[in-house]
Length: 89
Image (cartoon, rainbow, N blue to C red; front, top):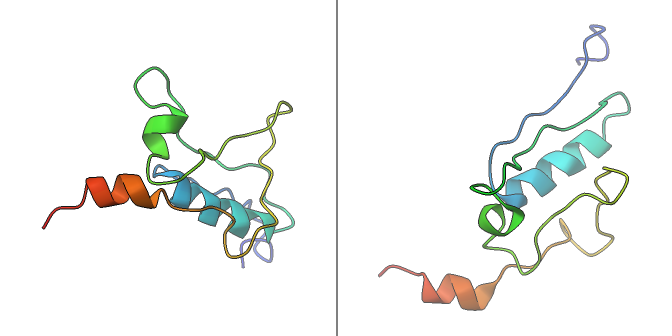
């Protein structure tokens, strides 16, 4: 829809790694999306803090590119042990 209106689509995600992965997949599906804006602001907002529910943080490669996983679903696994320890109720 944006492309048909000659607009640039650039998602902004200020959430955890799970939301970033979902937006990265959305962006990858759009041929004309030049970049994705996402949280990284150390020392307060690190990959570990942002992505704590995930087994591995979602990061960019040395070229500054997001590399999506070829694993099933969105390509990440939850840190079930950590989530169980932080469960309320």
